[in-house]
Each structure stands twice: as C-alpha cells, then as structure tokens.
Length: 76
Image 1 (cartoon, rainbow, N blue to C red):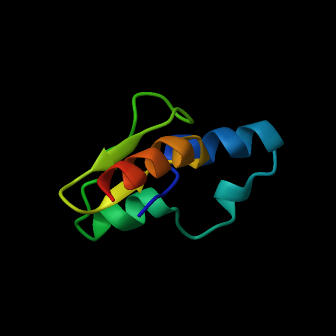
Image 2: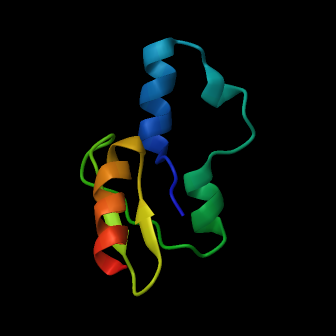
C-alpha cells in the first residue's frame, strides 16, 4: 500500500491554493490509522521512503517509485 501523508496533501493544497482539503470528507492517513494501520512516514514530505515489513513492500509517494521497484526486483 502507498499513500500520501497529510503533510504532503496539505503542501499540495497550499501550493495550488485550491482549498481542497476543506472540501473532501477525509484523507488517507487518518482513515488508515483510525482502522489500526501503523503508518510509517519518511522524515520529510515528498522524500522517497520505502518500507519492507516482511513481505509487504510500500512506497510513500511518487518519489519512492524507483527505490521501491529496485527493492522488488532485488527480492525477486
């Protein structure tokens, strides 16, 4: 699973000045944590961040695509 953090969602909203976060009913981060998911985000928004927890592999955002793909190919 991969998801934008609220910090990343917020930075997009500020950049575009669209106010989208005020109009949507929920964002992914609190929806997941409310359901018991332990969300591990990188130190800075938009930095690459990949997590391998036994078999599940996740990437935080589009910047994580290349390192996640390298990890997948290494594991194969």
